[in-house]
Image (cartoon, rainbow, N blue to C red; front, side, top):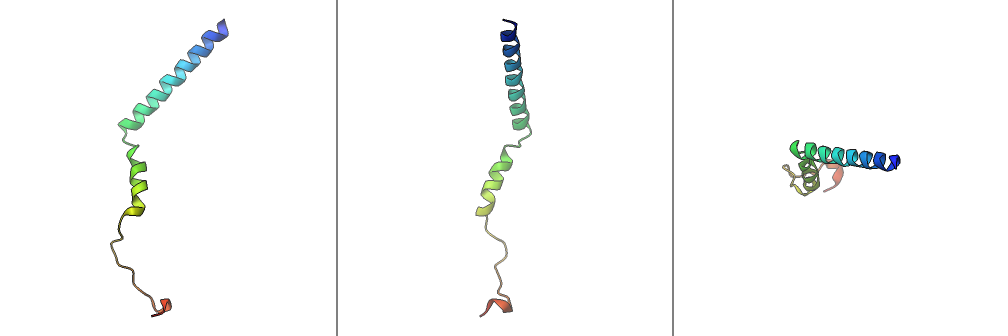
Length: 57
């Protein structure tokens, strides 16, 4: 029976830690970094590519 209380306590501490980490992550706005990285390949390049003499014509 004492093991059950220990398991419940440890489980609750893990849940509280996960919720705390989630809140800290949202407050720090770290979740938006992944969105920026996903959209990065879709951005247009500023400079037009130029041909070098080795490229041919």
